[in-house]
Length: 171
Image 1 (spheres, one colour):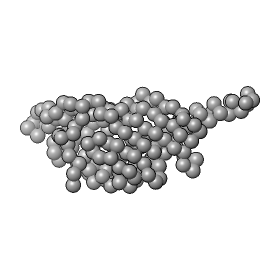
Image 2 (tube, rainbow, N blue to C red):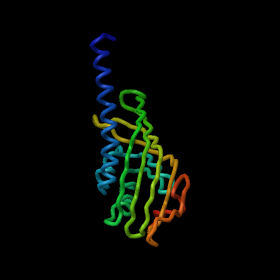
Image 3 (cartoon, helix red, strand yellow):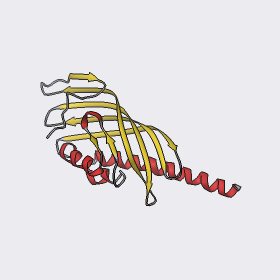
Image 4 (spheres, helix red, strand yellow):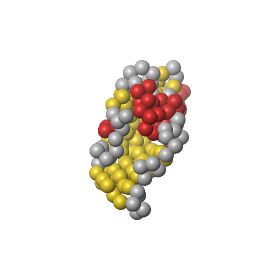
């Protein structure tokens, strides 16, 4: 491989790394903006795996968007997702994977609860029609604190690895 071709490959890898970073930021920002279509479009078309632990496992981006629309896109839900510490690895020119740390907070004004969660995303990416998309995402929950402020003071209801059992996503 010539020097110019090597430089071209290195620049392309930097551009691909930035595209994946921007994709994840677009996904997290869409979640915070209660934009299920924007969040859905960050995932690959066709079969995907979106494993959100106790929230559910989805094999299509449409299934994920449906539950997100039902439970996350309500005027009484206030969310903030902060993604950081990406470790992006390219498997080839069309496939990559990454670890992302997530700090998440949720205020449910109706239930009068506050939830803090940290997790690691285990993501896989594929290039579709020239654009990077998430093809697989698994959430590895690390910490969770679920509190109520219904009585006028913040009271911890759960401190664990996840909010499974304290927060329900059933219709």
